[in-house]
Length: 308
Figure 1 (cartoon, rainbow, N blue to C red):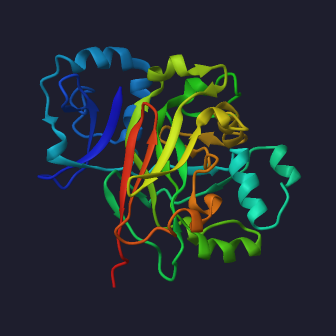
Figure 2 (cartoon, rainbow, N blue to C red):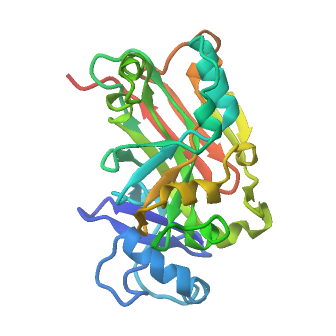
């Protein structure tokens, strides 16, 4: 099932919807006996009643929307937390080598992440601009994992049970700001604080049973700028599996429905790794960035000038 949060053109309130078989999107609140709904509130119910919900969608007569009638928002508008991992070895090794650094031994001891801004998510087809003072705007091709059940100290053997589904994550980065920040030793902050693309929708985990083998998820990933493919990889190349990321994220803390976990950037998945001299330069106003992940669709953003 595909789930989305949308903003109808004739409304000022976001609506949570599910894709129906006739090409329309059906409002979920009434189907669940609610008058209004946030995505994170719907996820535990859908984890339990998803099959029944899919059947009822075919007959449901509630409000329906076509894509010409709304704008996609981030599937989870404001997740309770947003942890972004650093779990693809090729990306980490290449980016460190460009700075003259060997791999940090600690990277092989545990998956590491930083907290990003859950209030700065931008949806499909939205506009993005570089933060003030930055001239090195970059995309990052990542898989987003959205939690559907709460849990603490979740073992890898139980982790998939807590996953609501997957989406596409573009971890936009201001590389010139990041370059200064990391010298302090606290990792990126303002370099990642301004915009993270998420969407266009969430696809529930049950749609991927044939692509999950043990802890491995197998989905092709690619990125294009102005129609030119720059990046290509696969989720199966993760050094740390998604269940391992969830286990680390939940160690000694509670995860909640709607929490967002990023895998980190796939190998070749950003301009920093590829070298801006090989990509036509950093992102600039007028560019169109498209990230595509198999079975999840395409997440598109339009780069614009920063408002004066």
